[in-house]
Length: 198
Image (cartoon, rainbow, N blue to C red; front, side, top):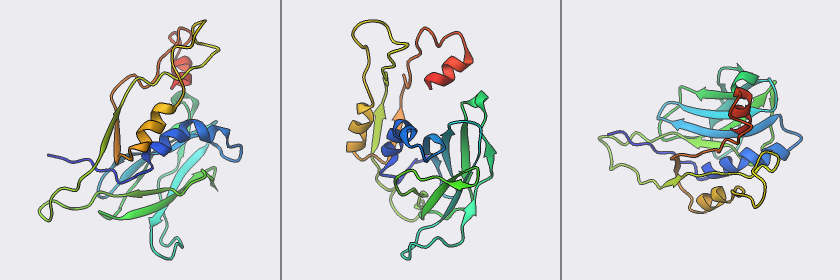
């Protein structure tokens, strides 16, 4: 049996950044960064830029000095309109059970996202200790109102409070079980409509 452990208490804070970073004029990011899969020797980080850009992640082991040492970097990816300017960046050659700090580079400039960026790899517990405990949050039905495309009359959905509610529970991982977005009638006929809604 495989266990998925994501030791990132701020995981849902990252989800909240999907809308809050967009107001930060100093950042070239539209959304993220958000931790994806997390293994003993690698993790994946997702992000979205406002337009086509060269993106990467620099990362290093966190230590008590607070001074980055032995920085490593992911491959560089160019975000494109076809994929909604998104990128999945993989940090490799990591050590199990280790906390890392990282920074997002967009067009070789460090992005200020307004919070420390860290991730912790899964510990190597097999044949050594009991499996670590972890807390899982489940969610679905994320209907964010968008007045220009919503049906007339009383709004059907709401805002981002579902994410704040989940964040308050401090889960180690969240599984989104369905209805992550709701397409509107204007979205159905085009790929750009789908990408806009996501």
